[in-house]
Image 1 (cartoon, helix red, strand yellow):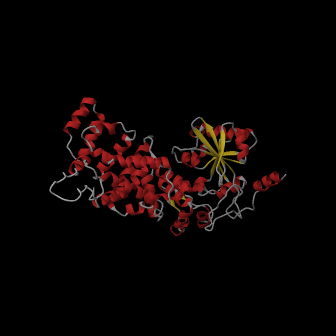
Image 2 (cartoon, helix red, strand yellow):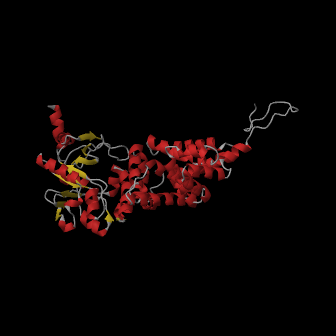
Image 3 (tube, one colour):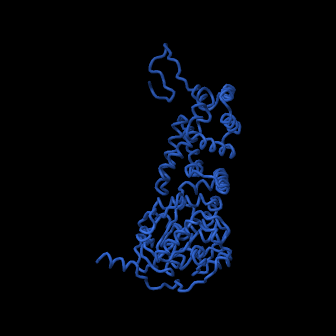
Length: 456
């Protein structure tokens, strides 16, 4: 009985807010140039399954927005008046996820359709001291769901059964004007979820839209609220930004809005240094090009490029202080990752990739003996080699070194042996030769000094 009562309370619509509209502009798909064929068949099947079960269901958000703009959506979301548990029962291959925002993933092979229940506009939502909503699992109506979405261009609902687009907040108008506009009071909405500060910058950069002045006005003042977002969620949002295919433009947009400080604690420092910005700009431009070509991008490689300039600066400093190259690099890596860990929870598997990519860089300087052959068998050779070429392109590493490794990787056995035979004796190998332990002098008293200055 208690469970039923709680369920009715959760699904009870709340009083309409001033921003809620009970009517919507209705467009035929063809009227807006939208074709069912442009929509994911999996998303359409999800809507059909919910309709057959007696529920309402719409494709919503980025899938509709990007399709209307002639872009290729990365994924498709569905909104429905069915609860997560009801959706889970309807689709055999589905799973419930999330606590703050409970949703269902419906699986079709490798494609995942994210299904969310219409949310209500909460009057007494549970928030933290800064106004961030901590739980958003109060179910509501379609109109309420449209009112609680962030930007007007993301509040378009497409019914693939009726081939109809519902627009409650003039999203079509804003799309034609190429404007990002917050639904409701911008300051309140940013406080509810500070991640929206990053989302508005990402959408503006990705779509080439301008940010409406009323939406932009409180952004710089509220930028500090980003520090209250859980680090894992902040990482997910940063990854979306960096893998949007418009990473370089997004980074410039973040800086234009005063939002880059503190996201990557060392990134704002790097961007103030011309050489550092050049390295990052080239890396992100290459990332955007790979995504445009439909090629995969490693998050570990991407974050390795973003933080490399600081790693390299510390590496140089530690070597100048007398540290050997490899321990000096490991110390620099630890310092940078420790400084980063408190803000952005980079997943451990990506951190492992970053460490390996960085740690391979001094090994590329060793081109004598068996060292190149051992390095050629390393599982991260390709990522480390691509990183080396990036360093060459920015002038940090010699072009001759990059060319030698390009030839070595392409060569057969005899060709590789010839390259090693002709390679100059430089880098780590030469440094080791210079640091040989001096011979013990029989006519000298006391202990023989070690290369590091310690006593034997």
